[in-house]
Length: 309
Image (cartoon, rainbow, N blue to C red; front, side, top):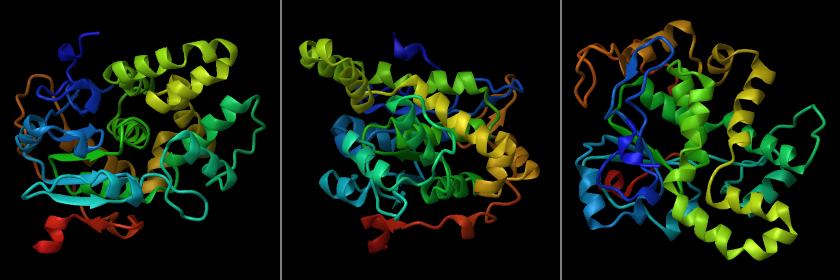
């Protein structure tokens, strides 16, 4: 697949960085999300010098790092002058301990699950998918993300280590809040497998013999290096199971009632005939820019540039 033809493609970055624009595609009401406002990515510490310069040309105002403190120490984000850089881990267990989304991280999550699905799972894969979907609930990092989106603090970029799980679920929720069709959202979620095709292919080739004997290993490799469509679909299934509708979910989890969701869509979406700039349309910010500030919670860590300022 030639990703450069995708409306979400951002030139100047290697595909493996999984850096994309959330905008460029029409929502269900026909309006299009403005490009240049919200980006998703893998770890910024993996960018080379040319890519770092291209990152500065995105004119970001805010970067949200969804990784654990350990991940951030091992591969710190570069200091980006003029940009507020904050870390709030995008996944925790029931005790509030930060976890990554590796297979080992999921073992820890399974030992201390954040929520329990009342339905009996038919197999281990379904059980893991349920744990995966639990990240979408009661998540301080996602509340911080929506707080910034409501404040119109853009251009904004959020990322984790590979830009696929914590970041992928976050992107799904943003697009859902803006009124995108769930199937379209999941299609964009699985594009990670195209962006990370080389890493995924290398991992599969390296385990091909043992995978022929242990088919479950292929699923583990797919999960470690890419994403699994059923896991993305499970996020929406769990939301509907608990809340009934997406609207009820956004109200309960983020305080986004119908008026605030409409304001969010008015800010980030434009009519197809319009020509928005990278700073969005000339319209007021959402009325409730500060409304979810008290609900953000979590451990919010400033970047080194904020400490110095």
